[in-house]
Length: 283
Image (cartoon, rainbow, N blue to C red; front, side, top):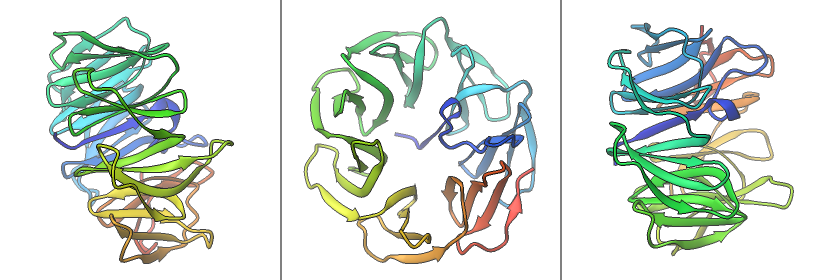
């Protein structure tokens, strides 16, 4: 499956639009940084050159970048796709009360309130219901030919055609996927995320990696914050821990390569090196 990066703008996940900032939806994919500034979608190189306007009036709730295609849902949850230069805008689906969506290959998977998972081809054809869910929580992930979702307090998994439903565990929150591994945290009774763990995508070989708060994944690295306030990283198996910086990051947006993007409490979005140096505001 191609690498897919997602931002859920309405939920504040992966956004930098806090406290009145004019920048939101920062993400990096395929050698480009994407961000929304005052309702306009831009792209630029990671060294902040070649800033290019992609689309005006870009008020969206969810955005996914897959290869050179941008998929997004507007505030009415109409789902569109376009090329990364803003051309070829096409409506995929409209008129459904969806939570959000994921893209895998030629399929777009989406969840409908109060508890249905459907899929539709990215050209808008072949709509199919995959599952009715009793107490769907809204979060959904697609990886390695399977769909992961929360039903009540249970983390569930089924194949991309809706068959083979199995339960993987209780009170778990997915952090990310890499190769055949699912990275996840435990969720306590107050809803707080605890520890970083991983298991095979078939639910076997569970292992605790770190007794800390998950921060991000990028490439072959896990990033997390310890009680001392410092940001650390380790290999994906939890070994080789490195201490990086103690920058006060109110909202860590993402870590890509050698850069960290974050916003502070007042709202501005910044980029720093992994060690905390070379702070620059994204404008």
